[in-house]
Amino acid sequence: MIKKSLLLFSMLICSQFSQAQYGLSATYFIPKNGSFSNPVTPFSFRGLGQSWGLFGVETGFTLFRMAGMNIKETAIKTNESLTDPFFSVMIPAEAVFSLPTGIGLFQLKGGGFLYGNLDAKTHLGNFDRAYKKQNDWILANADLENKNGLGYGYRFGLSYLVEINPQVSLTLEGNYLSGQSEWAWKGTVEGVNTNGDFVSEAFSEANAQLDYSGYEISIGLVFQSANPKKKGKSRRRR
Image 1 (cartoon, rainbow, N blue to C red):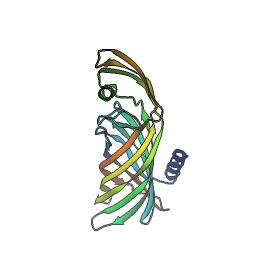
Image 2: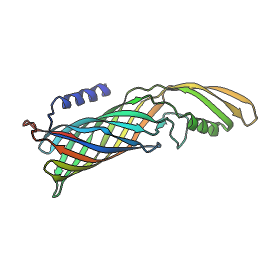
Image 3: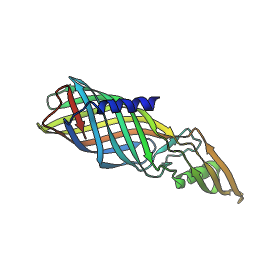
């Protein structure tokens, strides 16, 4: 229900905007107990929406290349990433409150987001090390499969826009995201215990979830088109 509501809200916002703003940014994601992400700059397209005075709504999308993320609701405890690198498409839907200042525009943002991951899999090397340490084994070798469903969460943050000229502005933005999606992994773990015996165990955690939590930082340019829509200011940024 939450996923459908966020998607419907994003589609509704997109149906109301005209070509008023567009832009490009470098967007980084720093996940909780994960690895620093790489920006996929040409595929960060955000700030689509409408504004009515100081209040507005925005959506868009960003393509991240996640270097590695954490898994929660699991018995496996480690500070290392438990996923291999993967691509992730994130779609926000948020309310925006703008406060003009002497040299720019300060914005408070908050709302929800949807995301989908492309071929996200378990980092078996990090899993093996964590499993071996927890079970006091000499050697561990896992063979696992996991689910990779759509996820959702909430987000909030701040942005600041500084006008360079009437057509171009510089934007700096920071957000905190907290989300999750089904992981539900299962398989087998084979290894050697401290007695030198070969061991094979079934592993299954139906409630495991990908922890899509962390900090998003972006910097970019906003380009203002010449013919904004008259009925409310439309925005297309980053």
